Length: 421
Ligand code: GLC
Picture 1 (cartoon, rainbow, N blue to C red):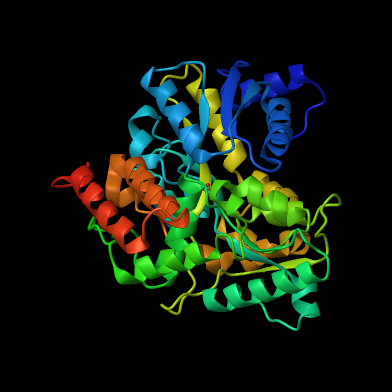
Picture 2: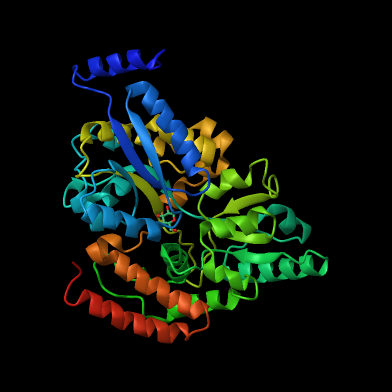
C-alpha cells in the first residue's frame, strides 16, 4: 500500500491494527558486507513509509564472528537499545533465550518458507528468528580465461588445482603478474569453518560433529582434505589468503586477479556491476567434489530476531515480517543476488532474468551441508573456533592436518564432557 504522506500512513496503520498502533522508533543491527547496508536502508525507508515507524540502522563489522561477540555482550547485559538483530543461521541455539518467540506472529508466513530453514531457527519449539535470506556458496570462475586456455569448469578439487595453476602460470608469463589461481576464506573466523567443512565433507570426511553429537572430525579423509588446501597456499593462492574473509577474496577477484573464487552468492551481483573488472567475464558452478565424489556447499544465511529486552516488540515484529516477506526477498534477490528462503521465488522468471545464479541455485540450497550448530547446542561457537583454529594452523604450516585434528579431537572431547549443552 502506498501513502501520500506520513500522517496518512500512520492513521492507516493504526486503523489496520485496530487503532492501537503508534509510531515507534526502532533500532536494527546488521553486519555489513557488499551492499547489504545500502539495500537494507532502502527497504527500511519503504517500511517507514508504510507504517509510520522509524528505524535506525546500526552497522556492524562484516565478520560474523565479530558480530556474534558484540551481540552476546549486548544481550547478556539486557540491552534495550536494540530491537531487532540480524542473526546468522548458526546462532539460534546459542542466543535462543534472548529472543521473542515468533511462531505465533509468523504463523501465516511460515508455510511459504523452506521448512528446514524454519527448523534451523526453531529451538525447543520456539521460533527464535525469522528467515531473511539463505546462503550456499558457488565456485566463481573466469569464463574468458577458461575459454582462452581451452579448459572446462572443474568438477573436482584436483582439477581445480591443476587448472588454476596452469592458467595462473601462463597469465603471469604473459605479463599479468598479479594473477592468482584461487582465492577463498582462510582467515581464522567462522568463514573458514564454512570453507573447510566443504573440503572435508566433499572428501567424505563428515561434518566435524555428526547430527547426533558424535565428534567425527579426526579421520584420514578430513586430514587429506585439509592437507590439500594447505598445498594451495603460496602456490595457487596468495599467502595473504590466510587473512582473507569474504570481502578480501572478492576484492582480489573483482579487480580481475583470480581465476577462481569460493564465495557466497552476494558476490554475483557485485561481480556483474558496472564497476567490476570481471563484468561479462565470469560464471558460477557448484563447488568441486573431493575423493568422496560429491560437492558440498555449507549452508549459511541470515535471519531476524526480536530482542526480549526491546520495549517496542510489536513494531519490531512488524519490521521482521516486512523484511522477511516475499516482496522484500524478491527485491533482494533481484538487486543483490541474495538467495530467498521461499522456494516459489526460485521459479520466478524476473529473478532468473536479473540474477541467473538464484534460479540455478535451488538444488544447491536443498543439498547444502549444515554446520553442527544444532548438534553442539550452546557450545557451537567454541567448537567452530577450535575447528577454524586447527585448520588455520595447518594452512599456516604449523603442524600437519593429522596432528592438528588429533589435538582438535581432544579439545572437543574436553568441551563436550558427557554431552553437548
Ligand atoms: C555468510 C553466511 C553465514 C556464515 C558466514 C561466514 O555470511 O551466510 O552463515 O556464517 O558467511 O563468514
